[in-house]
Length: 356
Image (cartoon, rainbow, N blue to C red; front, top):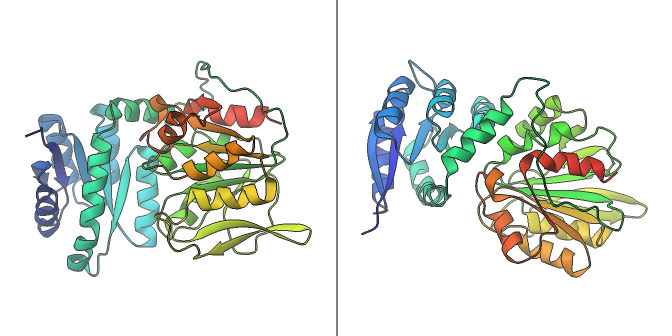
């Protein structure tokens, strides 16, 4: 039998600790090596037990989830999955946790917690197994987190990359991203020139409520305008549009104008929003003149539309493995020879700016 994944469960609710432990150990591939009822206990057990992954509640006594996460990331970097309540306050706190280095999150229905647990069982086990398969993830999280928290004005040593300017004009930019997105987007969007002469579309896999908070957070950090896309938005340059969680973001041509359509269709996609859906709609309008940038995330969303873009002579970029939290979506692009350039996280904004 192969070695089981060692998980520490941190939650102030005895019911949740017991339930999550039961869910995880029912897979047969996960061992719960310990539980903690507050953040201070959790941090001490991370140091003592050195688990592969931690599940961490947000609201706890003694030391809350955010303070615990900061200490874990600073002193003993370990992949952390946050368990968040589906409230406006819970949403904002979860986004802050993701920006501090949490790998991923799951929402729990605090009103109907018993029935809600059945809904997260499959997702939680799948996330833990995928995250565990990422080589040297704790080291990458530590390095990315340190870059996020560098003092203002700190200039990192330039990294070499293989970006060559496309031999045609770019009229729109698509960023497809999932696990590790909020943390990584903080290194890209605030660095984009506010006068960028084209629109940027971000498809971040997230449930409803979270994408609006993410857009607002990035807008405050950036000189370029960042907003959650709205139905019938007229597409404008120098604007970053983030797709709505639980919906599809589609670009469509109406007479002389190009607008955004927020819709439930198509309904048969694995993700809402879906990178393939948005990128295909951009290709329908701009042809090969779309720059596709596929960043950190599980799965291979974006692969099919990028393949179509490349068949038209377009240009695509993949984030490199070392700077990804999860090298899944970019890996599909790289392994199928669809990437014209493979860039470290630090170089993506710089190359976007150099295009113009």
